[in-house]
Image (tube, rainbow, N blue to C red; front, side, top):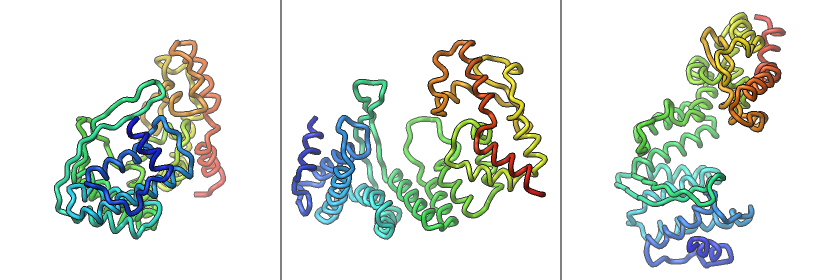
Amino acid sequence: MYLQLILLLLIIGLPVYGQTFESDTVGIYYAQAIEEELFSDTELELTVNQKIVLEKRLISIYEQLLKDFSGSTYKLFILNRLGSLYLQKDHLKSKEYNNRVIHASEIFYLSYTERVFLESNIKPLFFNVIITDRTLKHNSFLNLARISLEEQKYNQALTFLDSCNSYPEDFESDVKPLERHLNERIKSLYGLGEYKELDLLLKSSYLYSFFIPSENEEIIYETIIRTYEKPYIISNILEPIKHLNIKKSYFAGGIDINFMNEKNTIDLVYLSTENQVYEKCLKEESKENFYSFAKLVIKDRKKSTLYQKLKKYTTHNSS
């Protein structure tokens, strides 16, 4: 509640611009109050204009702290936040701040509690967040990679993404993703026309792309047609989708399929949670409901734009 009072004061006109904080810690506390409302799901609903005002004030606070406390122990954190906040506003400023982070030699450590609101919980969940200099360098390299992508400098983007791996994020979990920042790497490789590498990254997602809308659908389509011959696409991709059959499946929760010469199972529970069209279809996990849902999936199997585009490509394009 105290953070909300600070936020309301900021919205109605607390003189943040040019304000001198009594300490860098106080300034960071003000900034975190704003960040929590801007970038977290909290009780306060902000209008578009309020978000714009708060983001401008957030930038102003960080820039003022950088000016007033040049030797602050929070300096690396402040530089990184400015580099991130300017990412969609001013590439030159974002590059400046992010480059200062990646070339810095300071050691940094910050631990704080973050609130997360879930629809299923009335009260928020609290998580302990740890940020180190490695975390900040990782994030700044990622910011620079995203700028390079927007500027269509794909080789540079890949270099920055590789540099992210030199500063792995500090996760307490032993479970690590197979490929960090996969979406940025996919877009970089696509920009360079590296379809063999794209096929290695995307192959595991091909099957579900026929049932779950993907932002990478065009990239998936281009990768398939540039990697595989048309006879292969017809017999090992389109035909298995066309001939889906619930009767050949071994358990109620999935539909078995031999896709791209490999035995796979379309998980109906996963499908119902990832595709909004189907999210209300699976009321409960009973055999009857699974069967009805499976029939619906089979009925819709050829409706995806990916299926239609590949069918058109293999039918009308000459080899």
